[in-house]
Amino acid sequence: MKTIALGTIVAVLVWAIPGMAKDPQTQYKTVEAKHFTRAEGVELSPAFSDYLYAELRAELAKARLFGQVIGEDEVVDKADEPKSIVIVGTITEYKKGSVVKSAVIGFGAGSRSLKVDANVARRGDQQNLGAIHVHVKVSPRWDEKVMARFAARDIVKQLKNLLKAEAKAS
Amino acid sequence: MYFRQAGHVQCSVLLMCALARVSAGADDPKPTPENTISVQLAEPVKPQTFSRPLKFFLVDVIDRSGTAQPMLVFKPRGGIFLDRTPAEITRGGLETCLKSANMLAADRDSADFLLTVYLFNFGLSDSSGMDFFGKVEFAALLKNPKTAKSQQITASGTSIAGVAVRKKNIQKNVKEDIERAFGDALRNLLRGVKLRDAVSALDVPTELPATPAQPSAPAQPPATEKPLANRMSR
Image (tube, rainbow over all chains, first blue to last red; front, side, top):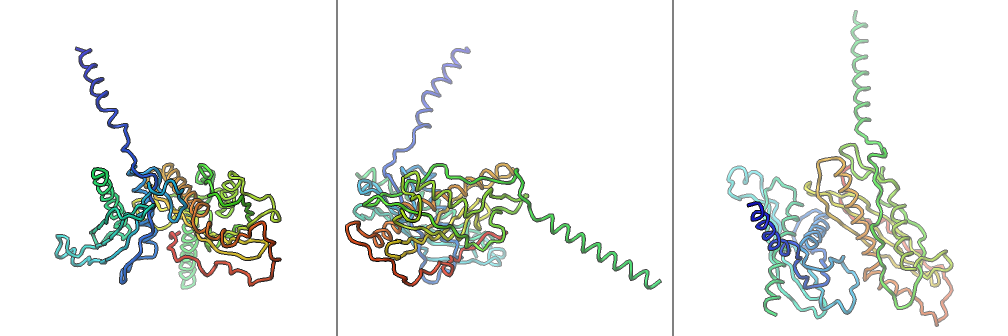
């Protein structure tokens, strides 16, 4: 009985471990995220762009899709350029929200919201790999930097899907 | 009788003032070996290669952060202090990186370029409260001593680290966060396009005789260009 149980555990481990240990294949050697620009009328604190940039880099590193997450305007070897991508983006809309509306009406009314548009391009030939649109809504009581965290997470999630679709197509 | 009552009131007011002062003093954290961290680069950043081998000499690192306590990086929970000043850490890190690539000049005369670093931010910055936001920002003034021409390059590094509950873990996370941000800033400077462009603009080919150093208009130290970043409330 013990031998059967032990055998079952070993079989399960043998089946499961390779899947757990294997990192997803890194399609691209480097990724560079630029500081996102702001559209006219977007009133966010000056530190917000830095924070979004830091969160985006942290999320990109966590995703393990790329060999290296490089800094803004970093020199890349010519040989690595076709296997490198650049993410540029713009914060297109920011609504501060209303605590009163949120408390009185509820159901998402008066939420603080942020819209971000990003473009992913290959460094070598500047070919556009796709566009990313993110819309984040949070409670108006929360700090605006929480939105940066959620936006960065959404951008990387969409980027993952984009690269997956591109890999399938090629 | 009246004077005795007035005396009591005066005494109690004085006592309250003294207590308030003592409690205010107790809020200020003091550096101890337990709450002091040592920020060091995990590994030196490899600078980019230039068309010809160049030597840099680090003239000075000047702290322009305007912080009263530059070594205090985290105030709550008894505080977290750096073991050296941010200027010393920056100097040490930059010299290590240049030395590792054999790009550090022994003295001013043997250098192709002189570097003066103006430090604006070193430590933690305002975060969402769900993590620590490390930020290092500085400007480097690159000067060619042969032509006396100079250019300014800005560099910044950021990092995000998770929050912790235990003091020991907070210290660990803050240390790692600042180290990563510092490494990132050095990488931004030494491997950045801005340095490459500045060097190619200022470098004099070795075949051409360099024009003698002229007393040109001195480059403005970048005090006025301090970024308007929100510093962490300390």
